[in-house]
Length: 137
View 1 (cartoon, one colour):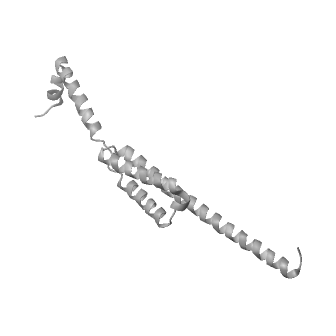
View 2: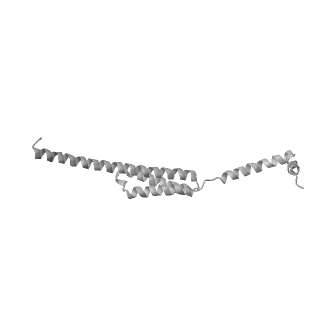
View 3: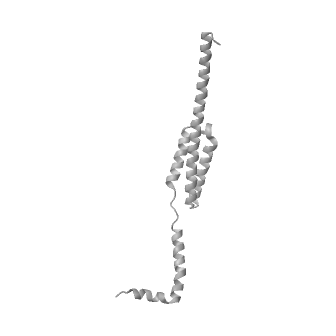
């Protein structure tokens, strides 16, 4: 028959308790090593998609530095995955996505400003034509 005393009796010996301490430390270290986060596949894919979207929108004319930074951070994220530094890889992938989205936003502002300037130019031309046709200066 199995009893708790059969297990507890050897632990009462101080020598046995001392020999368990290194074993417990080793087990806790192994469990910490096993807790490596998985590769940030979703974050990497999101960054890649954001960069592709930015390239498709032709943002390089308005936000080339931000797009270059996004590409560099994505490459660094892939390198971090290669080094098994998943925390850094996730961080860099998220930054790459944010930089690509910033590039897209800056490009939209730049395109809108260009359209606005063109419209203002057309308005000025129309006002000149109206003034010329009515004889008012």
